[in-house]
Image 1 (cartoon, each protein chain N blue to C red):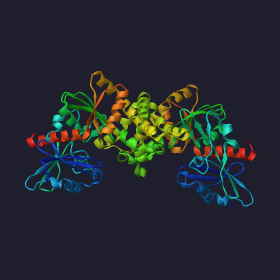
Image 2 (cartoon, chains in turn blue, orange):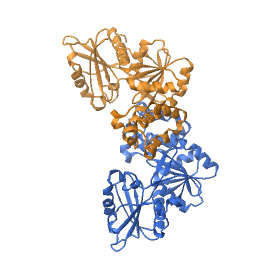
Image 3 (cartoon, chains in turn purple, cyan):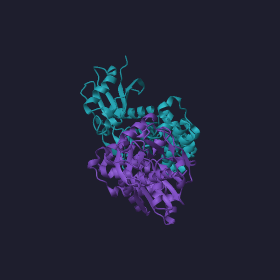
Image 4 (cartoon, chains in turn green, orange):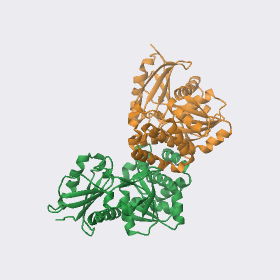
Amino acid sequence: MIKADWIAVDWGTSHIRVWAMSNTSQILAFDSNNKGMGQLKPHEFESVLLQLIDPWLRNDVITTVVACGMVGAKQGWIESAYHPCPVDLATLTKQGAMIQSPSLDPRIQVYIAGGVKQLSPADVMRGEETQVSGFYCDHPTFSGLVCLPGTHSKWVAFSEGHIQSFKTLMTGEIFALLSQQSILKHTVNATDESTTEWNQTAFIASVKYAYNHPEDVLSALFSLRANDLLYGSDPSAAKAALSGYLIGNELRAMSTQLNASFAAGSYVALIGATGLTAHYSSALDCLGYVSKAFDSEKMTLNGLALNYQSLKTGVQ
Amino acid sequence: MIKADWIAVDWGTSHIRVWAMSNTSQILAFDSNNKGMGQLKPHEFESVLLQLIDPWLRNDVITTVVACGMVGAKQGWIESAYHPCPVDLATLTKQGAMIQSPSLDPRIQVYIAGGVKQLSPADVMRGEETQVSGFYCDHPTFSGLVCLPGTHSKWVAFSEGHIQSFKTLMTGEIFALLSQQSILKHTVNATDESTTEWNQTAFIASVKYAYNHPEDVLSALFSLRANDLLYGSDPSAAKAALSGYLIGNELRAMSTQLNASFAAGSYVALIGATGLTAHYSSALDCLGYVSKAFDSEKMTLNGLALNYQSLKTGVQ
């Protein structure tokens, strides 16, 4: 029977993912469900967590649980502070940057990582700071842009061990709304994903168009529908084009920082799900930017392990 | 008891609106409901229409019914053709541009106006062409841009009695999705509209920002949420700002045409609901463009009356 030396938790708005970890931060076991922070009241968090991790707990030892993500939001289990950037990652992973949650079970002590805020332009992150920490511990000389694509893409300007500034773009959420709930749903046919292949040619053409004509993206969107009505378009091409317009728009929004990073000889560090980072990677590539992709789960666990080490060694 | 000389119908995706008209095109009566084209199968259209207009029909006379809008779409009652632009409005209002729908009731003959298509860039309209006809009959010397804001804003380049070209922007639909279904709903509080006043200062600032920085609109959207989380923003200001970002983005997409129209000494003819045209008018004004607003119902009825005159006089 697997017993955890410590437990890593990535608790977002829609899902919770838990890992039983060894003292040397090897994964011993994994579980997850869809009891995300978005549907829980504060008093419900502990029982959701215990349902998943109970088999991994010892009765005679207090197990440390380290969590990151929206679980630390105001509407979460307990609010963990936002640290203003520029912020040193070494500070973020210290015990003092976490908050202990009010768990009742004597077998566990739960710590929740703090988020990062930017005062102007106003911006916030929760969870991504832990992935950036995880990336940095493997790439301690990195200086440049870290991109974490997703529902809300985060672009982090990183140098000298600090998150210097960051920007959030709602690309993923807007793609989901447009492809599933707008008039475009009839054209991109997102409900029948199994039969739809990815059309890379349409994607790249749209990335370039949106990057070069940011003011025309809004009208390009309806053209997808009109093309379908007039000529009967291929849903896979239309869906890839929609994605390309939005990602191209995102890259244009980041063009000043991308050009500065490129001039400095850096690459874009992409942290996310494999399929999504592949799209971002090819979009960046077609515009002349270099990127490298990193697995988001590994970065999260790396980051949580740093937090755990701080707790274990008592680094305040 | 009111009897109609003819009946005007504006049948969109979500609503049907019907008017009993006199021979001199005065409104004798009005009715409407939410049996829009979007929820009807072809065989259901006639009974929905009759429920509304039955009291206005005579038993001894065939009453002409003239309809425009999505009722003529492929998924509507019967498909009416798209006319390729450039298209002469005089052509559009002729009998040959309409299609007779397959009604069974001997008391009515129903004609549905055709739409307009643009082959490249692909674009389509249904219903707006009738409003443009209605506007033109009162302004026969007009040359310039006609803007019909709404769920899908249409911008029509109009000269010498022709729709020369047009562009559709999904501004209204994207505003609805973002304000009601995205993470921004918590910030713009669109569900409690009754307590939310319009914040004109926030609106104008956002229009100008989006017009001048089209590439930054995507990141400005999430800043609305972050501002709320960090500083506690006023929902009415956030909602007006969201609207301003999207309308400013739309006006930037139209800037080439707007500048050409302005240079030619023309104004933008705004046709739409009063509140919405007021927002577009102030947005255009803050960017230095002149506009005049026209009531969309009146333009629709003017246009349908032209169609009726063609039917009555047998103009093919």
